[in-house]
Image 1: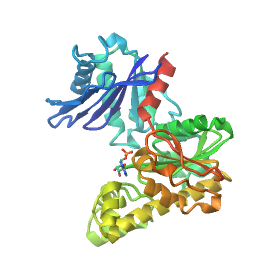
Image 2: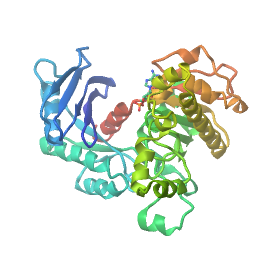
Image 3: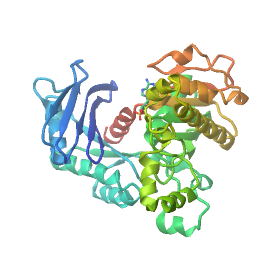
Image 4: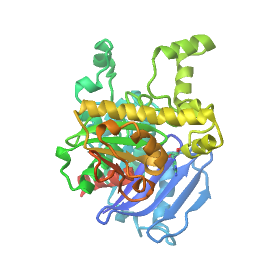
Length: 399
Ligand code: AMP
């Protein structure tokens, strides 16, 4: 079955066409600067054609969807001859609140439910909904599925998701830990079990999704029992530009010092912090930070050290939460590509009986076990593939 996967942001729309029987990526692309000016890039992966980028007016998401549909059906380099060959559409939706605990077929009631969660993800859910509505207008009879970033984490027990603040804030406003990157954590933990030839229901897995946004999760017997992101993606690890954990009193403290508001400070914690902020503004990209460190930058060294230290602390906490760990997985941009970061993190974990294989840690691309034979914990590098996970879920509900 051919599934069109849509990941809609406020001014961008990423798409892929995936054949779910052979799990082959047929085409992919990106519409950018929607509502500003606009461009679309498109690549026919099935035929190995070069990516082409065209500047064109994209006033809204409906126009973006129309452009995507004409790109994938184009006579010269499309991947399907008509839209009838697209059997279903899978949408990434960021926040599913407490209502959505698994992927669902989209109908009017689901659309209402996603809109009701917009309070919890004001930047993302409205953009996701715009993509859903645009697809509905253009392909009204094609079934659509919503796959939620938060759903995988809904198995957390209340002791992990509740905050020690007055209960009424949970009861009245649903303030609690939700977690994000759930599609990736689910995909990677399942891939780890499959790679090891083990039943996931007998494994304790820690997944480190380390990218521009980063989160860790503890997956016990196939179910998420804890994760580092929270009501919003700000808590937990140090990220590209997000601070991760800090004392909430810092918000008021900075606001008072600078005569600014809580939302000004939150903006700094979201966009100017993380390894970018800690390095003194060198970069949020780890490749730049390693280069700066080699050239003698103390602030780049500090940012890299603090990043790995925080990940190691979370792994320790989650090993305690699960009373042990069988497998640690690294995924996403940094986790898959940065062997130095992985080595730094693992250097804290000798007490768990972890031994890293330095040669294996240099490999890139496919799933790799980077622990020695004697290591008491397997350590896997697993390329994540959220689009494939969304396509699989979509096919499962529409097949
Ligand atoms: P993601 O959010 O998963 O796309 O990850 C993006 C981040 O991955 C970038 O900001 C970089 O910090 C990091 N990254 C990507 N490629 C490499 C690489 N080859 N070495 C180190 N870090 C990388």
